Each structure stands twice: as structure tokens, then as C-alpha cells.
Amino acid sequence: MAGLNAALEIGKNALFNAQVQIQTTSHNVANAENPGYARQKAPTVTQGAIPGRAGWIGMGARLNRIVQQRDLFLEGRYLSASSQSAYYETLERTARAVETYFSDDGEIGLNGALNDFWNAWNALAQNPEGAAEKALVLECGENLCSSLHQKASQLQQSQAGIVTELQNTLSAVNGLLQKIRDLNQQIQRSETPAFMANDLRDQRFQALQELSTYLHFNTEEASGGMVNLFLEDGTPLVLFQDYAAELTWTGTTASFVIKIRDTSKVVAQFDGPSNMVKDSLQGSSGALVAAMGHVDSWGDALDQFAGALVTRFKKIYDDIFNPPASYFFDPHFTTAATIRLSTNPLPSPSNALARAALSLQTQGLSELDGLSLSQHLAQISQDVGLTVTTASSLHLVHDAMAQQLDAQRQSVSGISLDEEMVELIKQQQLYQAAAKIVQQTAQMMQTAIQMV
Image (tube, rainbow, N blue to C red; front, side):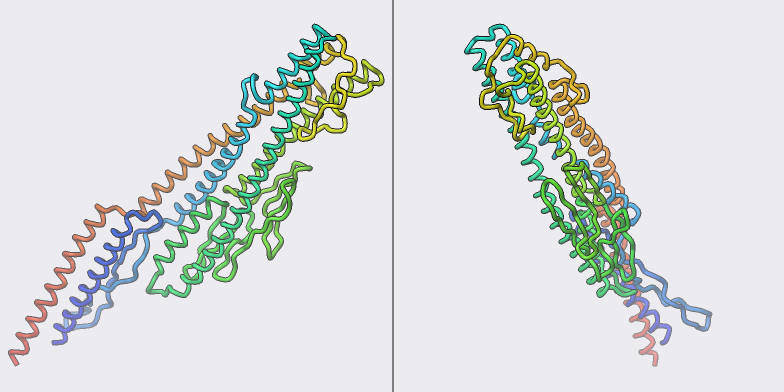
């Protein structure tokens, strides 16, 4: 009877194994459309043998534990590529918004206003005493100042929008870091050598996926199923179930720093006056910091244009009138946001004044590194366009890489309904075979009892 009891125990365990495997397959099928779900399997291991008359007799199989199908190396590469893709996508988006401010065909916008300004001076050179020509020069000068004011205001608004988005991003990052730490705690409490908290691990990977779009980090497997996160420079973001960093933003649109609250470690910094940009975050957070640097440099270039315009017209008036009663542009206001005409811009128009002004149209200026005023504006537009083009190209490259790596990851962790159906048929057959073992063993035991 001992042998029959052992056979009955083997059949019972086989029934239980098949039931759990069928349930696991059903769970996989139910989550086939869930992109954050990793396929689960319920593998079995051989039970220990027992001694018998004929030697060591096997005792069937038992479930080991339900495990996930994951490739940690692929997942790490995917998260890294996702971060790089988000960086260039964000940089492209912010730069493209600025590009619209400088895009014109010479007929409208800042270039159009500058061309109208030179045309008005050309008309005045033809008729220095003409009231209409004088009024046109003043009108075009006002329009040029207004265009510069508008561009400076748009750049300031762009920077304010970037700062707001950056603050919102940091808030989201802090929430995700705390969530990952809390999931570490739940996983550590839930897992044993025999049981894995697979669904909690899925939730944590979804949080890691979202976090990778905000910043770039490295992961480190820790004991108890937990994971630690670090920035590229080794700054800890999450440690076990005990620590989650909090990123703080302090400063203004002109200068700010991003620190780890408890250690005061600076992880990103922007300082407009010194043209300094520091970034250890990468991802969309780092792209926003970099975008602040780009927009600030374009604003500086616009101020450089306004300053050169004011300075050169002041020199013309000094040379011709010596000393002048007033200047065309007020020499106290030399930035794009503040440039304005003087109270009496044309005290005594003359052919010499008009021609001297017109000479600036094509003259290379030392204040603009040897470029003319129109060439300098063109260079600003080219720099903005080049930033957009470069970011767009790199975004496409890294996005394609991220998609390829995600496809490879899904080939390991994703659900194939065809494979699950094959597994289900196999498990049904195993269940039927186990049930047959139990049935036949029960009949044998009944026969043995009747023989007594």
C-alpha cells in the first residue's frame, strides 16, 4: 500500500501543478494587451527520491515558484534609449517653438522690419528735406524697435514656460522616486525564496519606464527583490526601501539650481549672466535645462544686435553733428527689450546722415564678429534652425533604437497568444494524465482492499 500511496501523492501533486500552470497561463492571456506586464511561468522541479526495494524511487515533481520572463540587460538598454529619445524630443519641441519667432522671408517679422528701415533711409537720402520721407524713417524705426521688443518678450515667455514645465517635471520625478521606494518596500515584504511579487515588480517597471523619460539613471539589483537607482555621476536616487531623493528647484528664470534636498548636491544648474549650463539629469529634465541655455544665448545674440545698432547710430551722429542735440536711438537703452528712439531722432536730416546710416546695411561690425546687422539676424535664425534639425535627427535615431530595444524586450517579456494556447493545450493534457494516474491508483487501492 505504501507504493500506491506514493503514486497517489505523485498524481495529486501533478494535478496541483497543472492547475497552477493553467491559472498562470490564463493570467498571461488576460494581460496580453498590458504593455507593462511581463510574462509569467510556473516551472516545476523534481521531487526528492525515496529508497525502495528496487533502489531510489522518484516522487514526481513540485512547483518551484512563479517567475517572470525578463531580460534585465535589455530592459536597462531600453530605459537608457528611452531617456535619450525623450531628451532630444523635448529639445526639438522647445527649439521649434522658438524657431517660429525668427522664421520670416524678409517681408515680415524682424528681417522685414530691418529691410523696411533701410528702405526708408534710402528714400530719405533721395530727398533729405522731405517730410514724408522723414516720417517714414521714424515710423520704420519705431517698427524695428517694436519687433525687437516682441522677439525679446517671446523669448522671455519661452523661458518662463520652460521653467514651469521643468518644475512640473521635477514634481513628477519626486513622486515616481517615492513610488519606486514604496514598491521596493512592498516587494521586500511580500517575497520569500518560494514566492515572487510579480505584479508588484510589473508596477515598479512601469514606474521606471515613466521615470526614464524624465531623467537618465542606472539600476542595481539589491537583496529582497529591491532595486537601487543612481544618476550617471553616482548620485543615489533610490536606495532599498529606505531612501528616495527629492529634487528641489531654486532661483529665477535668469539663474537657477536643482539640488538633492537632503545632501544639497547640485545635479543641474543654469546661469544666464555667465552662460553656464550644468546637467547630470538628462532625459526631458536635462533637455529643459539645455533649452534654457539655448534660448538665453539667442536672447543674448538679439541683445548684441540691438546694442550694435544703437552704438553705431550714436557714432554716426557724433561724427556728423559733433556734438549732436540728440541721437536716433536712445543710447541709454541697448537691449532688444528696451531699445527705443530718442525724443528728437532726426534733428536735422541730411544727405550725409542718410548715406552714413545706409552704410551700416552691409558693413561688417566688430560688435557682431565682423558680420553685418542682417547677417547677424540670419545667423541667429540659422543657429535656431540647426538646433531644431540636429535635435530632430537625434530624436529619430534614439527613438528608433528605443523601439527596437522595446521590441526585443517584448519578445522576451511580452505575451504571444499563440504560445500561450500551445502551453494551455499541453497543461490540459498534463492535467488529464495526472487525473488518470489518480483514477487508476484509486482503483488499484480498491482492488487491494477487496483482497484483504
